[in-house]
Length: 132
Image (cartoon, rainbow, N blue to C red; front, side, top):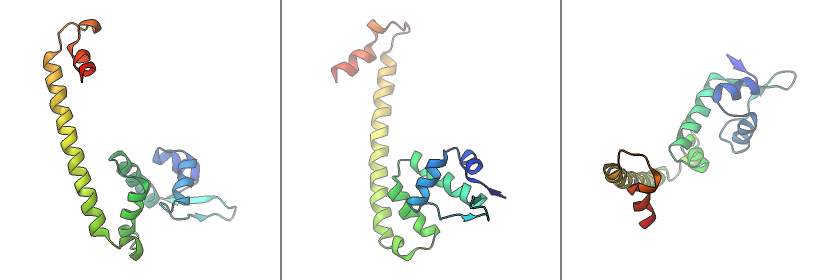
């Protein structure tokens, strides 16, 4: 199937300007066009935008996503130093996991202290956060 930009953007859950921005940033290849000049996108393009959005949700920057897409696109230049890039990102993710685990422990501790009553002025969670 093929889609014009409005339908494509809707299917991807983004707006048309996002699609155009991805094209300018070379995250999406320039699409083919109809004789009338309309951009035409494919199911593979939908999958690619889905990948981009998911990676963004996971905390990857568009530059990092562009680098990763070099593997998919078989781009020799973007694939240079891939091992170093992936190793560095792996360390950053490990640190983020450690930070999230620390936050999880803090939240569990605060949850234990929370009274059954939901009165804001008596909430030890608020008091604990203000003290830190």
